[in-house]
Amino acid sequence: MKRRRAASTWLALALGGCAPMAGPVASGDPVRGERAFLKCYSCHSIEPGEHGYGGPSLYESVDRPIASVAGFDYSAPMRALSEREMRWSADLLDRFITDPEAVVPGTDMTFTGMEDAAERADLIAYLRENDRDSR
Image (cartoon, rainbow, N blue to C red; front, side, top):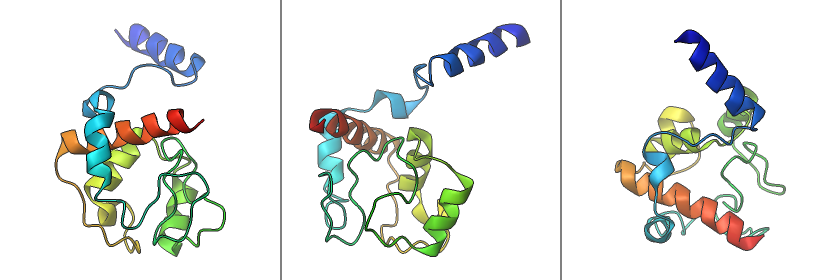
């Protein structure tokens, strides 16, 4: 059993992390996610290089290095997270969207969280889909 699990882990690593994700994050609907994004829109853009909102652009946010949008002044707690975590994985995004303050204590983000797991999965699917459409 352990040998099979190790082999699948090595296979996932060899494929560059392309193994299918488990759980609700993998099954989101980007069409519904566009509606969920309306909760983010007052502070975030989905367009590449677009600034002027309260938060950084969420273009290419899934798997992007944390606190890495050029020209955006990240809070000290967000910069500290970037030292502990390398990227915004779908799982980390899901936890952050659920409760931003729990993941980044002291964050400047005023959003209090999105409780519905399906809505979060839809939002993450929308972010992924938008990244692909914009390339």
